[in-house]
Length: 423
Image 1 (cartoon, rainbow, N blue to C red):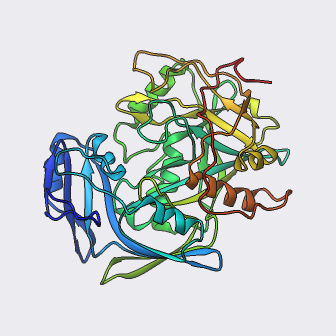
Image 2 (image 1 turned 180 degrees about the horizontal axis):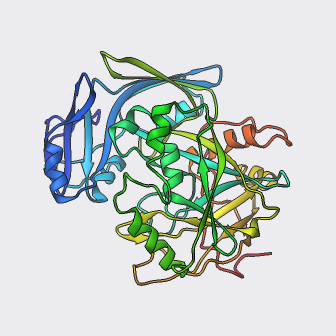
């Protein structure tokens, strides 16, 4: 299959190594995936779906105005293996199969305000996620990040928000849903002895309408009805933590989603349904050509110290539970981290191996470890989002005014085993 320079496939359908390029049909009910996707579902019940879009982005008084069109291209990529994601890194999977994004330099120039606008003919729509902010009963706040391990497909050894790609067409149309689903799926909060689980509730959040709230109710530790295997995953988690015989109580705590920043995004899903509008923090990644919407979720727990809770990463990859390190960063050290200085963090670590643990493996959760990191690897996307998070959620210090793409020489973040690089 030939591929145009714009990144849009010439042919309507291509299938090889479980990768499918095809068009998305639209009708009065919205999106309808073409039947070609059924071939993939026969091989794997949960295909990974990527939608390509085109759009124009302009600077307006320091904020981005984005006009994005999903209805013209109507192309998606569905895959059951990691190779399907590599097409967005310009890698050649087969002699004639490679999907290249526009020049990285052009996107960087736009993010650095060297040019006022940019048109991207094919970018990945859409990623979404949040930077959680934990507030203790003392009023002290911490930003919560996760460390991508050394075997991650992308950005290995980087700190990351709780984010990911849309998983279905509902989320493509409503990116706010990705933010909360990713948080539900990846962050579990227990008390110190794992007898109580804190569950975030968005019932009173004005950011969500009733339809969105109903969708989000399908996610969560005990109520993930969209994931038919949630009981199995629940048992696996407890077995790995060696607490399968404990009766764990559940406590709902109020959480609020905040759309960081004032970027204006207009996106056309279907000509009949008009244009949707969204305001928030829009991030364009120069490396992989994806557009992300990153917000923050503020939640309060009635404890006076981080050592009174356990934060557990519950993401998975190829049937392995990852149990990645989770980082708490207070206001002072968040500013240092953003500016590329050494910073002190608290890390919820464990004895899980890099790349995840097998079903017959159990792990031990360590108490929060004071940990010094020097110039941690932050993607330009995360750095910009952290600036927005700092300016909106931490009020004591002077705001950080520098935005946009900036590369700083930085270091791979190692796993925070107890006694390593601590004070």
